[in-house]
Image (cartoon, rainbow, N blue to C red; front, side):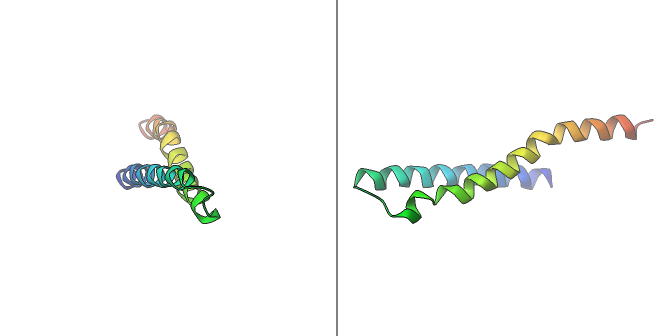
Length: 70
């Protein structure tokens, strides 16, 4: 599960970066449509959840190790 969460987080970051770059390119040609402006947000929210999971993972693993090895 941890491997897939890390891979998902990495690929979401790549897609998020590409959508932000596309946003800047669209802004260079004038006022972009709303769907281009808001297109990075779903990937950002997904990254938030996967990032929070990966951030909390060492803390929960430490507790599990401390209570499981009695």
